[in-house]
Length: 140
Length: 334
Image 1: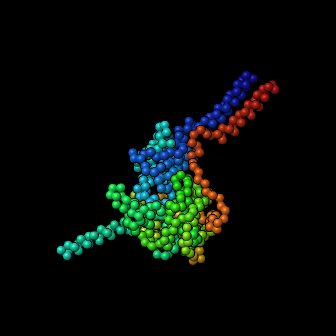
Image 2: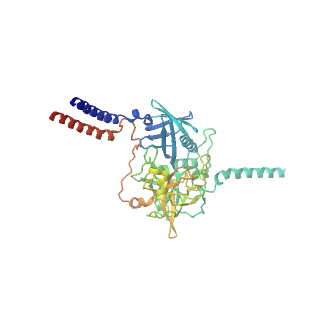
Image 3: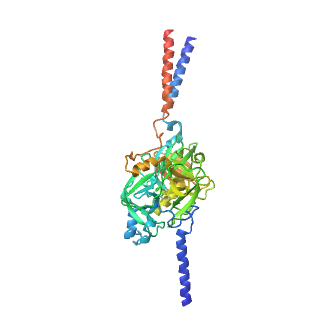
């Protein structure tokens, strides 16, 4: 009986240790979607390099997405489903006008592409977003 | 031959009017109307100074032809990027995001003009250079919280100033946004007027705005607009004023800040809540001491690698150690 109790106690301690260690492991191991977290810089939009540093900052804790779209700041909500599906919605943006008309066009295209995103993939430090309005490739 | 000349003249007239209509056809800030000249004397257009100067000097040229891209008369129109309001003869109120760059640093004052004294970007007005820019110390570029800045002018812009309301306007109060921003609501097209526009928008309850924007809607913001959309401020209107009538006198209650699209159904325009900043405004205007804005690389991605769920695991680890001690201690006493 004593032996059984000792084994139970050891098992209990081991379980607690295991749970606490598990909780300290980076989330990207437990949740593949968290690999999205961080600041990404746009490298290409539909194959073309942008003329300004367009960015995407993903917070997987609260699902917020923020960034710079060339002229304005934007904020949005991201919803990840499974390992590859991603939706970006409620894209809010400040209301400044860029004197550079081409940059305003780029900004609109970028925000439209984000709005149309349906899937993502990560390979190394490269993030690819694909959707109805185009493909975006970022790096960290 | 005379008839032929007449026909050519008619054709040219039609073409000319069609091209002008690209600028002036849309009647609204979005869903608004053209303002009467002089209706809003405190309205300020913020101009990109290097661009405005370059257009006037003829140095902004086409890379293909080498010819000037714009007419000299278009200098103000082509270089306008934000709005503002004259709240003192030498102070312009605007949005912080109009004067803070992508790297979170404040732009150089010498890169701005404040155009005052006109509602027409194609004629009239006076350009005044900016002496200094004061961004609110709590401005967060990632969230647009505390989206407010003051520009000190190098010289007096006169006394056509507006007062800040100082209190929150009541829900459903009709407020008026003014600006030279985009008059189209859809993403596919844009139209930027030369004439100042205005639109009436009801103030929305904080609860309704929170329902729409959630945590993005902070205590330093308020909303105005219609559930059905159709009327709103838009790109180019940033920094401009949102007025309400106070005993028949228009006073400024908000600053155009951000929104989800423009005039979209289900989304309101978001404005800097000036009632939260009256002390700061008065302190800066009067030369008092204020906390400076410090540019920082703010990141919202708090879970970017490594940390895991430390604040869940650590207490559990302590509990485990305590329990282990209790268990081993009990065993030793046995």
